[in-house]
Figure 1: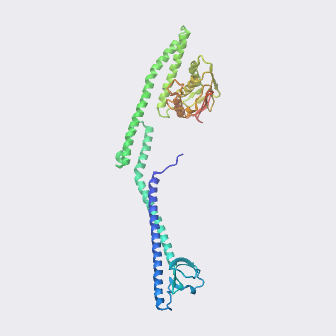
Figure 2: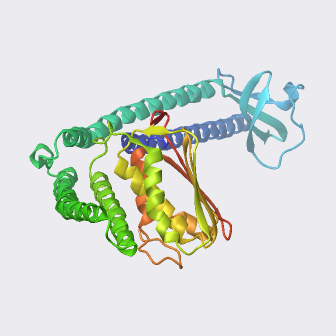
Figure 3: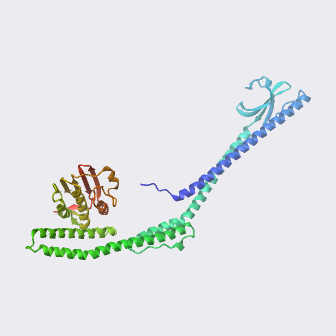
Length: 430
């Protein structure tokens, strides 16, 4: 089963992703900018205070370093536990270090030749940056959520005409099942945009398609109707001629051939008409498949004249099939005729049971490369003199009757067809 790919999600998701990308980028940029400004401010404060202390110390050797809540200075000799080297430094430089459980920005320098350090408590800055990060994270989440809501509403608004069109198409399809009249869409009920153009094109397409289907249906019905009368006349005349006992045996054989072929033509006309109609009209029909097999074998047997080929029929179960007799006859007849055409010697076996029908031969078989297109129209082997329609018709009838088709073949050893009946499609009778 194919996964449902929602067009609404496709429209809303890029909108949400774009909003999230923009908001998160701006948040990261804002956080980085504020952090950079804070670092520059701390460094500038340390530099200014260091220069101020140097000036005061130069004027008064007893001047005290700054002692404030966030900033304080010490000579390294005053804090022996300070974890930095007490050697001389070549230049002033700042570092971030942790001391006594507190993180400081430390400016290391020399004052009057003695190692000196300024400590700036970063606790307040860290708390501010954490609060800023939380605010930016919440703002990004809210902006993304708002974008999702807006995107979903926008997608729903854009897809409303399409959803309406889907509903109308479904309703038209149900109407088409009840009535064969042409369906028409109301373009004025849709906006004058691409959806409106789609409705207009769909309207023109359905009208053309209805016209084509109607012409094909009329053609099949008219041809079937017009040919039934002459076929019935020919069959009647053949039956009358067959009753004359004074006719030569060769003539009587020709008359029997006319009877068989005329009866076959009647079955084919009926089957073609049924295939051209919607499925459902023949659901209540039934036929004895054993009798259909007997008729098909009788019609195909003359084609084997002069060849060492026999047809063996094994009726395990006499089943009554829920199907039109003409459809079953055309399917079996076409498969049997193929078997007769491609079997030079050997046996053609027909087996019927309650579960299905098997037709196997010992003919030349089917090449492996032909299997992908075996049931396509006009697809035929190199040795075929026909039009490549027989197995295509077999496939269409099997699909209509809900028969499963299984074909196996070995080149040079024959072909095996198996048709599996649906669970409720057949039942035995005596």
